[in-house]
Image 1 (tube, rainbow over the protein chains, first blue to last red):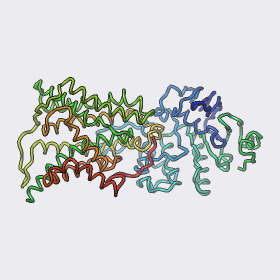
Image 2: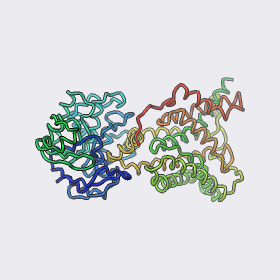
Image 3: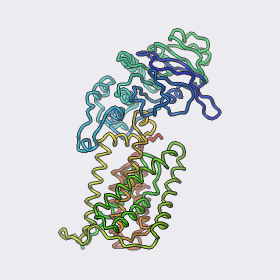
Image 4: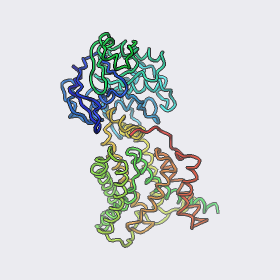
Length: 247
Length: 289
């Protein structure tokens, strides 16, 4: 397993946001994490990145992640995107993406200051081509539309060559054409050997590309299995306002 | 008359460089920690006292400046690690109170340890030089040259180096940068060290114009705040330019209306903010903490 979540519990005061949640992410698979609003999905992501205190165990490639600070996780091979865009708007797209390489690249303060280029052009071009943002590299992020910024954020998470990437609602705010393209990109990421743990509300995306799905409601796991299995699970249907899920 | 204005502008550039350097320290800390550092001026005052006693030990002046910069960097690092870091993600008001308290602690300690009476602090360079029609103190020239070098270096570091790009990332999204692998606390420590080192340098360069006593940096702190707001609290370039602008305009105002010199900077800030709420170079950003 690339990631094992064991008895994860997160409390915010008296509220139990995640309650004894356990699931595994297999290598080179797309694992969906779904559930109604407030189910605790993003809190799971925030726990993995130690942005919230938690109980339980988070094991990445047999290493207990609890011992490592947030900024070291990228070096270990984990990266993520955010539900709400986390873009550095006053930077160019290129600079935004380079921040994703911070922990991977050594640098020499004096050489860099004098104009020495950080040797990362190859990675930059690769990831920019994959996500179709090559023409925007020198454009300031504040001038770009939402759909492109989503790709910039994804590029920033991919440039560090992660082994596990956490995508928090990558399809939110995208138009149908962009969503189709996103599905292809996520499949391509999987083909590159990267495991994907994805939170997504758009069932058309998640049911289509996930290998396995864990369903949460009120902080607890209510179902797990292949998309075919969970889509017909009565507990899941009930959680989604009693309506059948349409993939 | 024209010659007088040229001299006023040149001397204003020297004063403005001091404002700009202090404002840069304030802006750097504001960007990375989202707090106003009220202790920026008094940290410089305290370091200047240390320099005064090092000079009394007959150490060479340039070495004393270097030691003062190092002392400032160490002080800034200690403040970040032991006072700011534990509170950084918990209480914004707490952080503000820490910097305010720190300013008072520096002042109290200086008065207690070094005694509060004014002392004469000799400049590194005495005498003046004439550049065409402009007559300028050698110390003023030193201030302008040093400040230009520091402005340029800081700008290059922020825009070309890994640490600089990381610091700019932190300025916009602390948690986002952290998740991307930026060691936010280490960079914050570096920024506090740079800011306090700058404050020490500013103190030593400017104190010969006044006298060394626990309040001598107060007007510099106020003007630097004005410059930081005027330039835009999220623009290091803005802080430098606004500092220079303020120094020059203030010098010209003081020539014609001496009583308005002290209040001028604040009036200018209010007028500019009425029309440009984010300052001359500030950008509207969606900051996440």
